[in-house]
Image 1 (cartoon, rainbow, N blue to C red):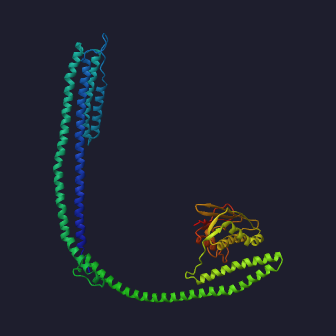
Image 2 (cartoon, helix red, strand yellow):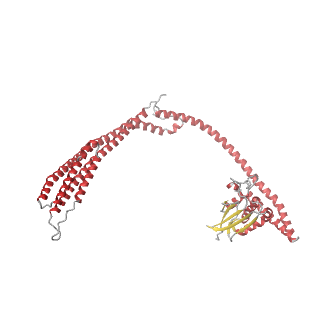
Image 3 (cartoon, rainbow, N blue to C red):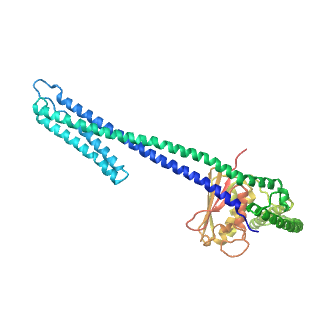
Length: 501
């Protein structure tokens, strides 16, 4: 099938005609504006020169009246010489206007013609200087002064009048050119205004109306087009006809793909259902495993707690202290088993922490007491300086957090290291810094130490201490992260302060 690009050609032709009209209108408007501005500038410049010559005549007359006026000084004193500065300023102004006129000339010939005006201005300046020199030497009441005045009166006014007449003609010529330009511009605007609707009407009748008719029928039969059936008037061998043919081919391909997708969706749905069933089974087994492990561990722990209590009652003081430590550790392990049982029984499968009032210093001291033997064997000492701060959280789990931090220091800080813990209240939070004097983190470790199963020495293993500590702190509404330190490892921990209800 060959394409008849009549639709495209007509659209391009109509667009080109409209663009040509727009460009023509813009060009005519720009040309008319430029010519009008040039004529207006010419007229205003001529008017300014006329006014400058009038001003020169006025300044010369005032200066001459100063010579002819009766003496106004004290008796016996000479009459002052009139100031010729205003006349010279008027002549300088005329020279400047003539220079501007020459600079605005459109060609060198025109600039040469306009430059001849400066000869007239120079003549006027020479006549004035000749008269000024003559009157300074011979006052007006002398015959020589009278002769100088008569000569100036015979030459200067005629020259000024002739030049004013010349500038008046230039002004009137520019104004007449502006008026003559108005008519062709008006006719051009009327012609473009009439041509634009005609072009639009031709575009609508020849291209847009048939196109809109075919598109409206296509819209009315949109549902049938989805099945591959073309609406009336959808044929043809132009671009729109080709588009409808492509739509029919696409509809057929989409129908085939839809059938395949329905089959795939059914298979995936069945697979997801089977996977959900397997996940439910795994979850039930997990809950059962936690429950069984917790039940099996509680029985021996109960025995250990009982034996520890008996041992603490019937032995010497040192042995009683050992049995007390065993009982304390067994009690903590018993609480962890209770947490496992709560997780197994809960619907969410997650541990829920308490939100109680916790004395921060007492919790850290208790954690230090639990890890004192470990720190002593590792040769690590603790320096704790905490103010009396009460925070909101789970006392047992916060104690576990600080115990884990002490344990990490014992493992990685090295013998002779010191773990310093400081704290302060700031913006409704307790801000605690934990820093040791050990070797610090391996290069590139960074935040990775808070990932589960990561270790500070970069080796393998099942390190969950810092990851668990961050989870407990963030669940309590605080944060745990690295802090800047010159040596060793530095952490910053925040917890919300306790607020009385």
